[in-house]
Length: 305
Image 1 (cartoon, rainbow, N blue to C red):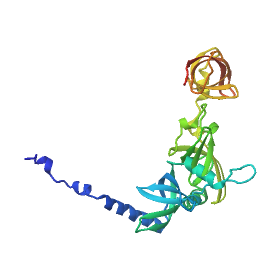
Image 2: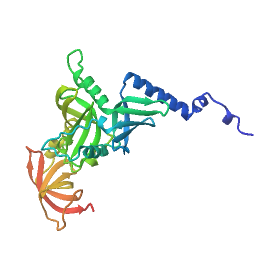
Image 3: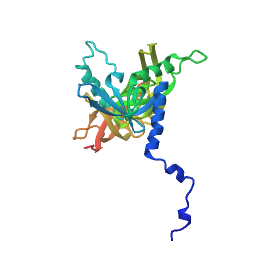
Image 4: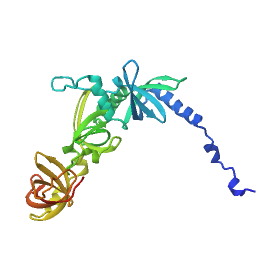
């Protein structure tokens, strides 16, 4: 005979009986309401597909429902002039969307098929709506929600070696490596990832209308700069361990373990120094204006092979 206490039917059992279909019905009800009210929804960019006619669509997943957004509704604006030769526009758009896979994007539903439960949406409409709300609508003091020097949360939508692309309330902006950290940053992909939420400080906003907005932002001013305090602890002729972050035109950029940015033009080790090598660094000069230590790599402690 089974243990009677283990066989008690509890009130919580009622919630567990909810079927997958009833859950989907509830989500579909939410989706139809969002369609009716033009509410902004947020999903994950999960795929890119080419239709038989040649058109490209992106696939966004919202609570297990597949949402189709034509690439023309993704608001991937590319400047086309002599200095921006992208080749075939659609090919370039595809490449950009490919780097965005896994990121969060907003969308507004444009059409539904209740029978097939298919959804077509627009990222462009959602971005324009957000731009109006956050850059043009003003509070009682006449200030918009996003303005210079304000710290705001942004979404990382793509990452390359030397730049992070972020979306700040409907506006995309590129943040170069020099604005990501006070530390030497050899590869932004080691610290930032598609789908991350990061804090940025707004440096500049140029807003004519919702269609024409540009934003400049940085990450490093939010994190703060400890390099001056750390540099004060650094001594000429002192020997410190560090990691090679970057190499450019014979200049080696080293991040010392004591929290100091350092530059070396000479390496005494017979081996060729490479990125991410751990090295021994002797300080020969301290540049207080640039907050860097200058010196020599005496040896490679461990190569990053």
